[in-house]
Length: 359
Image 1 (cartoon, rainbow, N blue to C red):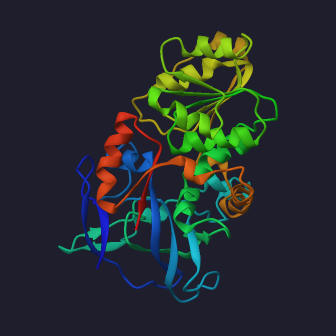
Image 2 (tube, one colour; image 1 turned 30 degrees about the vertical axis):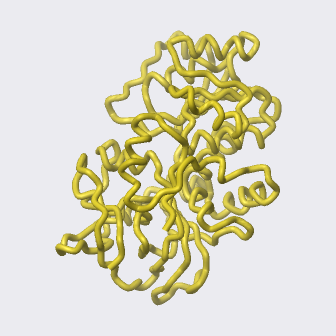
């Protein structure tokens, strides 16, 4: 038995309880977690914004050490340090054949398999494939990547979602160029990673926007040159900070209709808005046909940073080792497993950056 954070039903409180994991079968790997990040996507699963089978062990951003492998696993061995990859690509579906592995049609099929058994015999599913809110997990071998050398394993957990998503949103989706102005909406874990990525890309003016004035220091440490508390005049203030034109690029990390619309309005004519935040179906964003033509702006979705994890992790690790990217700057609290419900409350209230569960 290992301890885990279990979501018994949509909208129900998390339960910290014992679960029984099977031994790794063919093509599977058992991992002892070193750390797991508490991501807004876990909250979206718990409240039903994202629909996957329940009851489930949540958590999808983690790193740890391989304990055992099943038959046919040759890429990793017991003792190897790994980063969990919650969205593995199959390599054969239509998006994968186009090279768009972040859109793999089969990435989340593993979420429908039985993962473990609760103390009362209830079958549990693995949230977003990897069930990282647990002392140990069993995952397909495709869901682990080698942890990069020179990066503390606890901090490496953040690479599995926040960093790949924020870094990729800037470098792959928005394709920020040196000297461009960038505005990031939402200073959570992903937003902080996006701010650092914008600085690495050589952006000129880097503006952070959040509802909380307390996050200004976090944002500036990550690379923001300007900080705005969100209001009805945010788009106007951004235009003032960018010579009256608007930002070249906006990265939206909130997933709310009003924020997406403001991000779009904050960019210059011909500007680019990348939406990273996961919003509900009730969040309707509207545009009229004339303004779409007149402004010539681009609005695009961004899944997992449009990343290729196997290629991007080594590149990001090089930035970390060179001191250009600070993983620790994303983390505002290190907690135990039973601290996850409070971390959810902090996210809802807009407090702090990333909470990191350290085992």
